[in-house]
Image 1 (tube, rainbow, N blue to C red):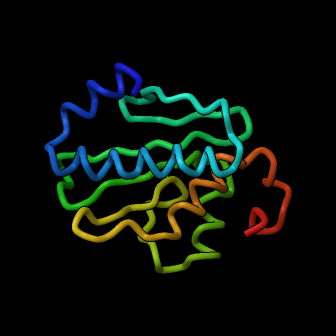
Image 2: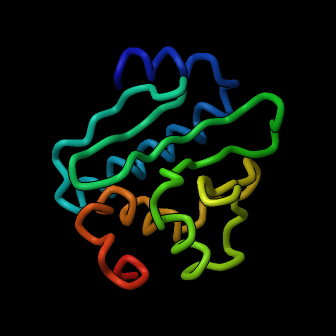
Length: 133
C-alpha cells in the first residue's frame, strides 16, 4: 500500500478502514482481471485514488460529516456516472455526475465492480454506446 494512502486509512474508524479496504481490493482485482498492469495508488484531493493509462481515475472516501455513507468518485467530465445511471438505474444512489454513494451498513453491490472496470478502461471504451456495457 502506498505510504500516503496507508496513513489516510489510519485516520478512518476501524470499521470504515475495513470497508474501504474491500473497495481497494475490488479495484486491484478488477485491474488484474482486465489486464491493467500500470495501476498506481496515490492520494488525490486527500482521498485514495487509483490511476492507470487506459482509464479514468477512481477515488473513494468516507467523511465524518456523513458517517452513514461513503462515496466512489469518478471524473465528472466523463460519461461514466451518466452511463451507470442508464445501465444500473436505482441500484445506486448518485451525487450528480461525479459519484456513487453507498451506505456503510449494506453489502457492496456486485455491479460496482463493473462500474470500476468501465472507469479503469474508459479511454479504450469511451467511443462505445453505453461504454460497451
